[in-house]
Length: 272
Image 1: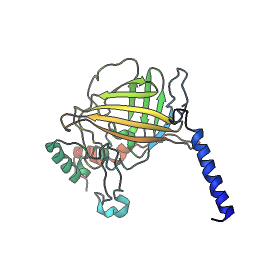
Image 2: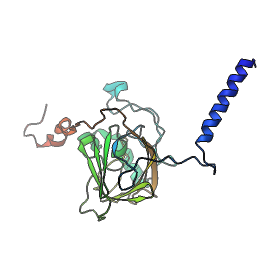
Image 3: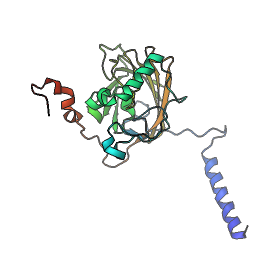
Image 4: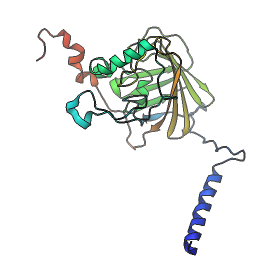
C-alpha cells in the first residue's frame, strides 16, 4: 500500500475509533442520552411525530402487490415491507384467519379507513400522517391528522372505559423514563392496517414510548385479543420528530370524501 494511502487509512480508522470510544462508558455500555425534560422532570414528548414504514398497508412482512383498484396502476399498488411484528406473523385462531382473508378480499367495502371512521389503536400511530403530542402531568393528548382523531391519556385519574369506542380508553403512567399506556374499551370494529388484519371488542393494548434521543421515540405495543389471537404479540418501530420550522397539523376532513359511502343509503334516489 503506498505510504500516503496507508497514512490516510490509519488516520480514518483512528478517528472512527476515538469517536466510538467517546460514546461508550467505562462499563462498555453505550452512554445514555439525556432527553429534554418537562418542568416536572419527565421526558418531554411534546411535538409532532410520524412513523416511517410500510405498516400502514400491512403490519406483517409482505411483498409488493397490486392495489384493490387496478385502474390506478402503480399509484395504487402496495409497497413491500419488512413488517413490524416481533416474530413476523400474527398468531390468528383458525376462524379469525379465515375472517382476515375475507377482509382482504373485500377491503374496499369493509376497511373502516375508507369510510373515514376513527383509525383505532395502534393503527393511528403508524398511518402515513403526522400526529401531535401535548403533554402535562395530568393528561397526555395525542391529536392525529386522519379523521381528526384524538386520544386522551389519563395520567392520574385511572378509570375503566365508560363506553366502548373506536380509540378506546387510555390510562398512562411513567415507568422510569418510559411512558406506558394501557388501553381497553374498544368497539371491535377497528383494523390494524389496509390488508384486513383486525381485532375484536376484547382488544387490550399496552404501549411503551421511550425517547432514544431528542428527535426519536421507540414505540412498542403489546396486543392481546383472546377472541382473535392464540397469544399476545408485540409490534415495535421508531417514531420520528418532524423538524420542519413550520411543522404543524393540517386539516384532513376525510368525511367529505366519503359522504356517499357513509350516507348514500339514505338517498331517496340512488346516485348514478
